[in-house]
Length: 403
Image (cartoon, rainbow, N blue to C red; front, side):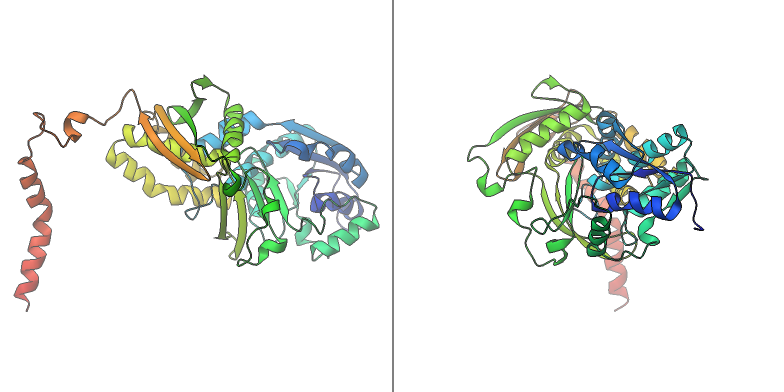
């Protein structure tokens, strides 16, 4: 055996891939494997992880409750930036990876492990996200990526390997897709979803009702913001994780937050993903509404021009990169005046703004009114228009001369 590692901390989900990887690491690296799971709101997915980890040969399982840290220090900063990738994806998986990697590195240092490992494939984005974070936080740590080393070439091969070692297989023919869940979203990939023409089966969805079966009466809620962060729903203050979980429940019952898209992976290929992001969808709409009252026009335009770059950095795994941190500083500075309330209607998959208010609103009815006023001289607009039209006038005159 030429490959060696003494102790490996594995990012462990309990799914097919990581269950197989535990045994593969032991057999191919002769190492002790510590399974690590970050509780980011997976719910029941964590219940049987300990038994499954031991069944696969893991030395022990370490589960850390990081839900509040996840929402407060990762989700909320991203929401302050209004980050959306390629116009639709709210980055639920992307934003979880840097926190998992950080906690994994911290555990590796505590356990004096000489390597870390993950179950990401050589085709996906997560391998990049994990390993960029590992490098930023512990540049000398050994990284083992089994999917880039072993001869297991498919899910079927992985199932066969699991059966060889009597490891329970958490994938069935009835649910031929992979899932990744946290407090921000639930994602689905693979299996029947690999055909972008095929509609996702209704039984696949977990967090959201079908809009067709959602209540026939709207639900009205109010979300309150302070300096760009949501702090209360219907006047009740909540911790970040509690607030997001509450909105997930309310939005899910109303069929809100489903997205089906074909996205461009960092590694260069396109992939089809289906996502449920119920609470996050509400927060994006509510946040924009408060911003519309409180942000200066040019500050808003500047921030919006940077959203694609910020979202790309998060999607590609550069959370701990200096450029993301610099952009975050700008985003947070812009958000200082974003304090106020948004009243929303939730109805059959739709989120509609009913009203918004803010203590430091820049909206002034005296200026905005179409009725008679004594604070705005409408004749001033003539000079404003003439100055802005000057270059157009010169261009038109010049073009006529050339004819």
